[in-house]
Image 1: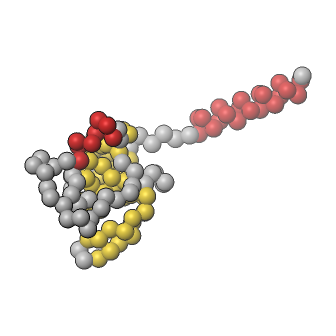
Image 2: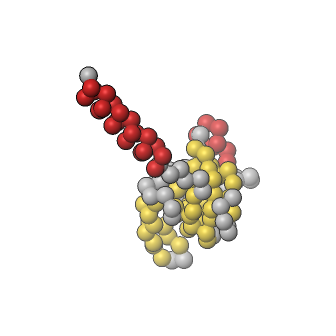
Image 3: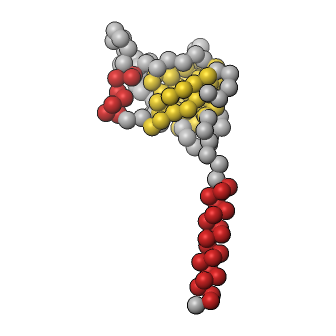
Length: 129
């Protein structure tokens, strides 16, 4: 019985240490790399959170470039540095955020990028909002 108490106490200490060491990222740092054709969507390369996005090849200025850790968000943001807070994308309620008003015609050679989608709730180009 004594050993069981020691084991549970050990697991408890490890668990509490893991929780206290886990850092919650409140602000995402990224770089706007471009826009998705036919949708009101911005492609952002995430800098400070590994594994949040996907890898893509993006064609800009007659050059194909490979980008790692890219996400997509509705609305258009200026090229360059961006700091933002976000929420999860809900396909049912957020689909209209991607649509232009009036609608744009898109050439079928462009397809959507298969990257994670988030909805930015606040953003800044200079510092965390």
